Image (cartoon, helix red, strand yellow):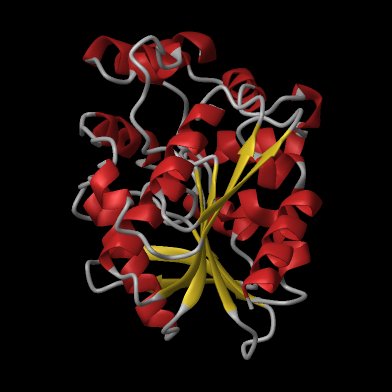
Length: 301
């Protein structure tokens, strides 16, 4: 009966209280933005140290940075948060998932925390959001780090993954809602890394738990009804901020060519390509990533 019910209605919704107890204990905190979004965030490290803000990617959450944060907190005040429709932040009250709203949320978060200038690090979708934020508020971003960022124009001969194509049409969304399972979450995570054996049960459980957080999946489908245009090369050339690009050589989601596109248009960029690494360098090789960020920032000063 459980399988039949799941096929008709989709997987059961998670319990918010249980999920907050599991993924939101201290140092987690929750802040309500002026637009009504209740953001889950963590603010760690020496409060007097240089601040660094981490913006995660699609279907991730602030815990995706866990491995690299262990290194960064030695030198930085590290702020990370769950984007709208992700993690414990959950669906936005306005149900609006245009990139402009993600950028606005980021702006409100740093204003709420009270930091004027900071290093901004964005992964995948979070990289695209970070680039847009830097375009709008260049005076706030001391330095920019894009990790396997999306936003570059996709090559015409490159087809997106089947699951992403399915989310673009009503029948695909209907099907995904009803067949989505923990095993599919595992396969999704394995597709983001070069070595699938690096994915732990903890990572799988977290993706599964947040995918059934009430409203998160519906919000994701709503977002995929939106069209996020590729970034304009003319705009990217306006970003004078020193920018570090970190890419996995084996990234099949935002391939190396996207990093090269950014590198070719950003006036002050440095690109690092890491062999035998996929779409999630901060997870697959956190020590290498934190070393690259620290040494690059050190060289700038």
